[in-house]
Length: 151
Image 1 (cartoon, rainbow, N blue to C red):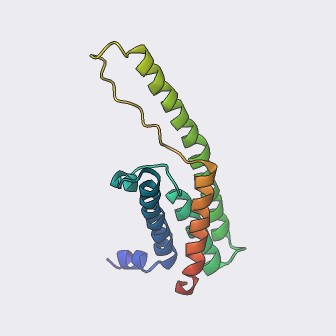
Image 2 (image 1 turned 90 degrees about the horizontal axis):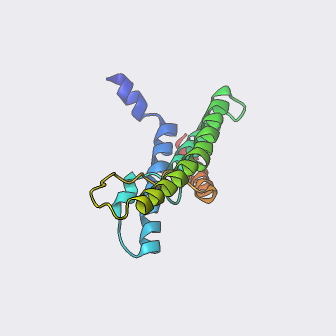
Image 3 (image 1 turned 120 degrees about the vertical axis):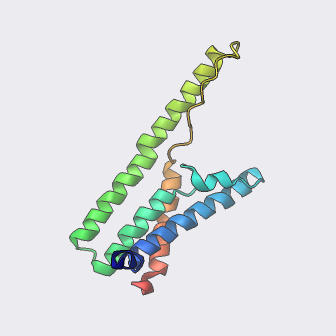
């Protein structure tokens, strides 16, 4: 059971998770401001402003750099991990979302007169725009810098 206690004592991890949770909460506020209605589903879906994935990994990398050192192999590993996650969020998953949108449109057009066709729609909001990734990254770095006294 000491291992669980050690995990809960990991301040870098806790700050990164807090950054992720704050980003998810901000998505709720952005959705409320944008559509004038409260949609709590945004708390558990991918995509949206800001990117919680980006906030998480940049807070993690910043925390590692602050606590262990910017020249450490641990920071290099965290930074490469962050770059891969953010590239995936803005690149691969964004492209998959665009493809899903086109496929849904094709299905709608091909089968609009066949009500017996009941295929589930593909999820379209999978990734992030570059602005959402940058906003999430800035949020993660900011939260980590604000929490630097915790390290």
